[in-house]
Image (cartoon, rainbow, N blue to C red; front, top):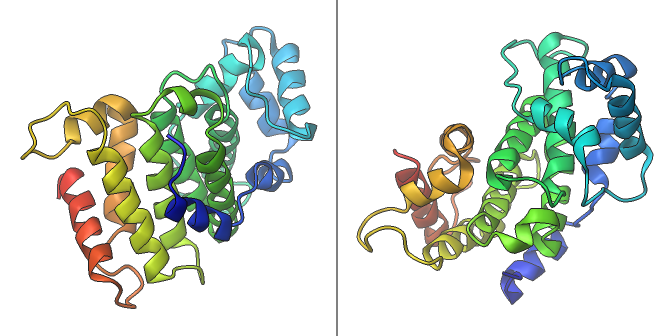
Length: 257
């Protein structure tokens, strides 16, 4: 589902960049974090996994095909839920989010990813937890992904709207970036993309079941929390178009509130 003309213009204005987030993470994914990821498959094939991760860190393009090495440990890392509330550089919580962000950004680009919408939820959550720079670079990356539909996205029309949702959430939380008209267009686009999918709900019911099935139970839990965290009726206190407010209200209803 290629972006329509309005969305394509929005994406272009957001400066899509395939390698923006990888390059940001690369300077923070130190050798000890790489080793921790490489050991996740019960300590098997650690050196192969480590070399595979390091190859991605210096690659000119992100891979669309991962294979078992290092795909298995990246997949395991993407499911790690950082529990430590400490977000200072070097803390366990910070390290866990860096590891998950890297793993998710690679998997979001790959063909082998089985539940891309669930993996994307982890990427967005960790980017937000790691602060404004990560949020900004993740926004550029998702703009690129929505424009080019890499890996599993181009063959999963039910998941594709989640790229628009992730972009919306990152955009409204990026300091100094929120233009109410842009946020309104992204929110309106997401609602339209979901409602145009083949129906799996009664017309007068919200598509919550479809969204949960597409993102997976844990992925949808994260998306729901992010929607309520990022999309207030007027996140920046700036006012905005009525359609923005209507779309946000629709999203919050779909998310159960």
